[in-house]
Image (cartoon, rainbow, N blue to C red; front, side, top):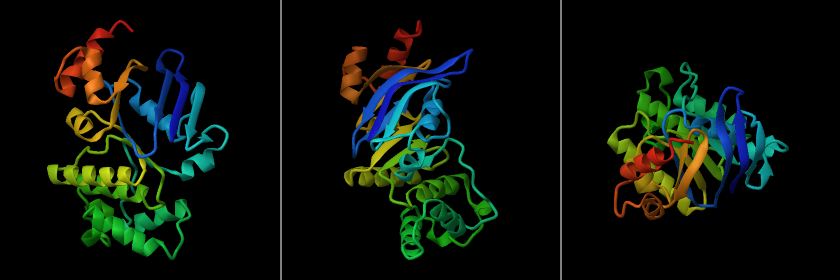
Length: 244
């Protein structure tokens, strides 16, 4: 569902992403981890069609993002690291705004919006203006709005920021349910315990280069650390590749 081929973003003074190759299958939850400035957000912005690559190719569900951006974006639910919300709208009005962007039919919107707002524990706040929401509620609202058009692929940068433990548990359950329905989920996160618990495979990026990828066991093998936690595995892989 996601294919990145020799994907590169060169700013002249800095190569933010360097010849990145990866494939993510239908129903897979793929975690993307790396230090600050590693190239995670740049990669996600290119995948979402917000930032143009210097070279390489992005295929989303078979659609080339550079040649067919509208078709590619139609099947993506995209949540950036710093989502913008119109805070004078109510939660339900923002959902309607998002639905209009994706041509969700007037007939299907009301039940779909209610189902998602209930699923994300926001229904009781549906008619309250967004500026009254907590940070965690805003984060849940933006994820809910990204699912209105039933995307085949969900791309999220730091999905758990600002969420309390109960909300994290809820969102993890929702992601697992989506994956069971063959929805592909690509998440960038600094919370390694979440990546460890949730993701089928994890890619480690540093200085724009994909250093390693695989499930937790495969990454442990790459780092030669046996049954170590992902945090130790991650730090070892990064340390061994600081010369890049």
